[in-house]
Image (cartoon, rainbow, N blue to C red; front, side, top):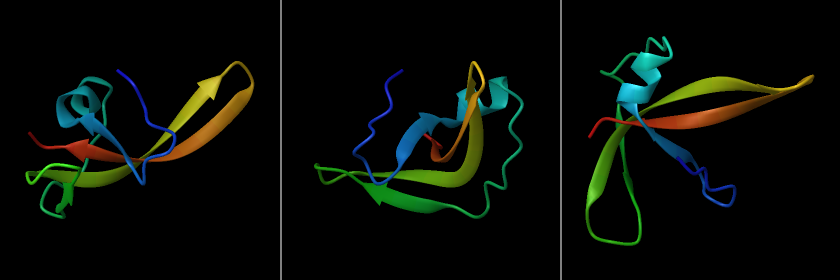
Length: 65
């Protein structure tokens, strides 16, 4: 999986969020559109990453497709 540091939001499959124990309200969803004409439904959530002793909080869009 790659995260785009220049993107407005990083999208991750919702199934990965479930695998790591995330519990998100999927009724509060939005849609995002990239370069093409299609859209992807998503819900927003925050994740804290830890690399050694550095913690980084990131807003993640959990893709519902």
